[in-house]
Length: 111
Length: 117
Image (cartoon, rainbow over all chains, first blue to last red; front, side):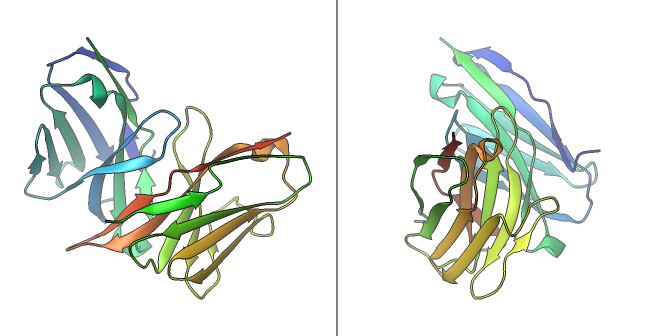
């Protein structure tokens, strides 16, 4: 079983739609959680860290459920510029600051 | 803040030659930097963890004699692909760790696209 699992998509949605991505992680010792976005042929960019209480940044909301080992990302009012691959990333304290990446979920927002 | 640069952004080299890639944290100091490789349509694969002033830690299956890493200062790590072969053609990305309030966050360089002919 992969350490971090994501639905690869693609999610094809119209502009203005709300879309949610889910991610599960297998190691209960995982301590820190992040969503990164990666555009085609570019480096990943940190979108947001995910905190236990859940957090929101503009149109983006991230949730963490430690009991179910599940992380989510909700994007409201999708824009064309949101089209990218969204990477779910976890870190175990025992591995220092080494990150484990999911394979990513592709989002395509159409006009 | 938290800008990481990489140089070169792309390189084409002949089989058997060596290529050096530089990774710099521009506005912060990074005790730890990481080197990743990404093949088309695949996820990032961690190659090694680079620690300032000590030897790099390589992931299983990554040849340390082929991928030489040097982290001579808190703002610079280099990856040298020695005796490159076409199968080494890939997108190489570095990242640097920055401690935020409660956790380390990693910031990525723009990547180096290596093509070995």
